[in-house]
Image (cartoon, rainbow, N blue to C red; front, side):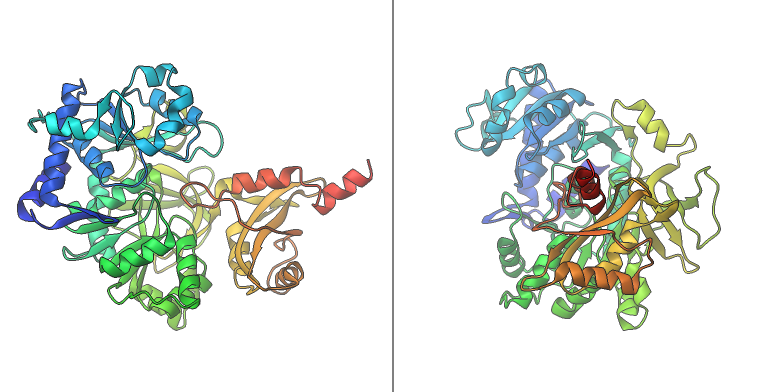
Length: 526
């Protein structure tokens, strides 16, 4: 079980640093002792196996002590995103029936207006940090704890994590992940990431959602993890990589792009310890991959997965990146090959397998899959088949070598004039236009064609005639149906709190935008 791995890390690597956070650090023995003490304190507060215990905090070592404490006593860990609105926070506490919630002092104001809401009133609040003013104090609970929790029997199917979606529209939705699913994912990470016990791992993602699993990878072989101090900031990230001698890290493409820009502008930080970068969460263009190779020269591993399978199911390995960079550029558009812990199918709308090479919906099956969506039986049945297959929201194809090419999300497929257009393929072409640094493509209502392809772009600093250059690039490299009918310049493109493209927000932006040619014509015509 996972809790046994934590104990073994403490006994086998007692003085080895488990976590660095800014100037703070804790060894494996310290993390274990404090997690055990907090686990016993939670039980004294009435927490039992299966109860939900939440945390509302920015990034800190205590986030992982909290996770491990839940893991030890069979409680369910719930992360509350500090960027959520108060109403969304209340929804999370109510939906998961949270019994206890740890709240960092800097996040107290987020709850100030909802303290009288029933889900908050019935939840025991524990303050983390100075001056929180809550009934219980995290450090005092640890000091008063005897560190001897009851460790109930845990089944691999028992829930360990409720991880909530970003909540862009509607109420956030919880994915239920079991001990089985999380342990399966951790075990597959090591060979596909090429991790070793002496690696220093840095994944500067927000721990409120499933990314928290990415920073318990130290359980694999007693590795050391570096986490952001409060929140991600590129300058501090570069300092941490240098001073902590980070060897392997995970970045989302937007972070990789900022890293390349800082290096090109003359960053003098020492990256010599960095051997490998893994990347995922959103598509990376071949141009960005080439830029990372040019500036850092490290091994690259691309990841594809989703919260419903804990994290990752498909990997493009370093040697496959090198093939792409050396003369097989199409490989750089691939997400790699599915790992051996999942079965896969590519299906049509009726659930029938399509011939290899043809496009269809990706189906997955494996021990890393979610148990379902919390309190949403209908939505669970829509995606989880009785025989264990999970129907993703992704359209893809697989070639004869087993390489996966993701064409787009089903919900963002554009039907214009009766023809399907994949926004991701249009974005990949536009990304090669050097006058822009970022692009998103969506479909918006059109009075004649049903939907029209439109693009939002961010201009490169100093670039001129950007819209005209983009449109000319489209005419030369895209069919008439694929080419955007409108290009909008934006200072920044909308993204979710997890760094993913927020296409719902972009579509909403365009919905009543009179600058669209067809909307303008309708407005002029009355």
